[in-house]
Each structure stands twice: as structure tokens, then as C-alpha cells.
Image (cartoon, rainbow, N blue to C red; front, side, top):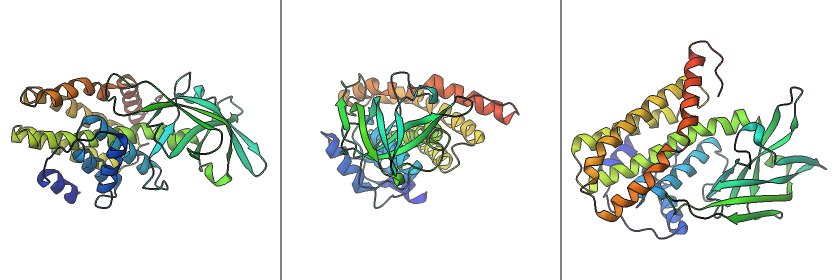
Length: 311
């Protein structure tokens, strides 16, 4: 990763303003030819962004490319899992029904990140129950413009409001056989994505923070600590996200990142008011799903200790 490290440490830390999702995407794509690896892309594109919200969006896209390398690089993508009952496998009611040589898809997703601007949709759907009455999930790839797909914008969140979200309604959407991805929708895709997303989103945020630190003259030791944590998470991002040892390592890295962010608070006092207030508003993003993350970490510890764990 020496190329992306050199980029973080030597690239001009300017902050050209971004005023739209389209402007963010153009800047994200401009980084891609130089850093095609998802972990490198997350760091470098995060560095290029003018705010945490757009850094998050780039990290999210890098995470999707890591888990779904078949996605076209020039298309914005969105994972569509959450429904009225949440995102747990048992809560998925969107139905994938056989029809002729293919399938049809029906259901509602209540919360899709970047849903209003996604061109490729990755939809978690149920094809019924197994003998133990467990939901049998599949991952379905859809063109967002397909007939029967309706995107309903949601109000902006109180943090990172630049990143849009949407609800998704699917009514008799025709699905070709090749667009039902191989493997179990939960164990192969949805479950590991939690870890993949944690890695790449935090890499993007770290890339952006290194840029802020360099531009605003934060102490050298603090800047280098952020870079060192990025190196750790970059290495973890390249490992098997289903391995409990990887969960434990990521838990340690994120704890170290949290401590570093606490040490950054004094440095933020020297940053211009607009950027500082935006950070104070948006940093809540890093605490989302913290309870789920802690539960997953404890399950990984139990698995390593010889217990079954439940994640």
C-alpha cells in the first residue's frame, strides 16, 4: 500500500467544495484509475473529499466493490436489505418467486443508502423457508431503472445530510437467472458486508481526517497516528471478513481509532468554524450500529475460545 500511503502524506490537502452527489461521484471516479483496489480507493477517495459525508459515501462504494467485484466501476450501487422489521435475516420478507426460466421480485425496503442515486441495486430477498423454518435468502442484482422498481426519497438525516437515502418498492420485477447471485444471501453477502463496510468506511474517514490534519497543521504525532491506524485497517480489509480473528483485530483497530479521535478534539479547536461544526454534527455516523458491532465482536471472541457464538 506504499502508493496510497505516499498519496496521503504528500498530495496537496486542498478542499475544493462539493455541492452535490453528482459532484462527489465525479471526484470519486477520478481517483479510481490510480487506486483500483477497494481499500486503496477508500483511503484515497476519502482524502479527496471536502467533508465526512462524501468520504463515507466513497467508503461505502469501495466496500460494495470489495464484496461484489463484478459490479461496473462506473455505476453507483446500493445494498438493499433493511425492511420494516429491520435487517435481520428473519425480518426479510421481500420475495423471490420462480417464473418461467427466471424469477420475479416483490417487496419493500425501508432504508437504502444512496438509494435515490443508485444505478445498480443489490437486493436481499427470500426464496422461502428451509426444513428448519429458517429464511432462505438470496442476493439479487437489479438495474435501478427496471420496470416495477420505485424509489421513494426519504428526508435527510440529522447528520451527513448530503448522503441521500430512500425507500424501495419492488412490484413484479423480472429477474434473469444470472442476476440471482450464487451462494447464500446471508452468509456469503449480507453478514460479511457488515465487516467489509466497517473497514472501508473507516478507511475513507481516516483518509479525510489525514487531509484535515495536514491542511490545518495538527501535531505530527497525531497525523502519523491516524496514518498508522489506517495501515492496520487496510490490512484487515484484505482478509476474510467471515474469520472471527479478523473481527477481533478490527475491534481492536476501531477501539484505537476511537481513542485517537478523542485526542483529536483539541486539534479541532483550531479548524475553521464551518468545518468544525460539520464534524461535530457528522461524527455520530461513526457510532451507528455500535451495539451490533459490540455483539459481533463478543461472538467472534467466543468462537475463537471454542464456543459457538451468535452473530
